[in-house]
Image (cartoon, rainbow, N blue to C red; front, side, top):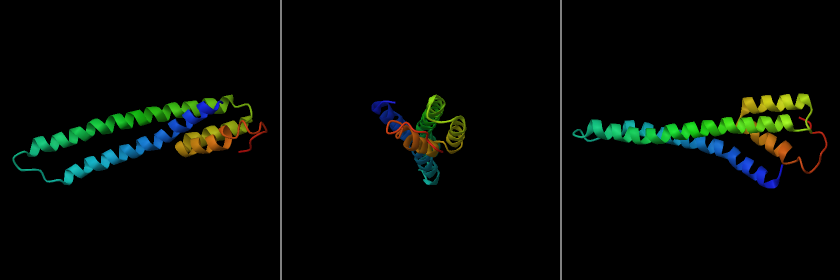
Length: 126
């Protein structure tokens, strides 16, 4: 894998937790709107406006992060399957690790296997 491809893969891998952090922050901000006491005259419209504005940010952030996560899982699994350095048992363990630990498993695989792939072509132990 070329250096540029590695950098792009690492950047998109780090976008996953950033998206989830934004999703959590938007939910906290939206939940804090429930504790604000609006004016009595403008109660229904001001309350629904604030909630709907945050809802417009929450759903797309979550869906884009989820889509990016699924795409990155597929890319990493394809990289594991096509990696000739790993044996079959190692491939299976890496796939299971990435499926169960997601972002953390992707980072471990990136720094342990992808980053070290060009330095030596020896077998990589799990």
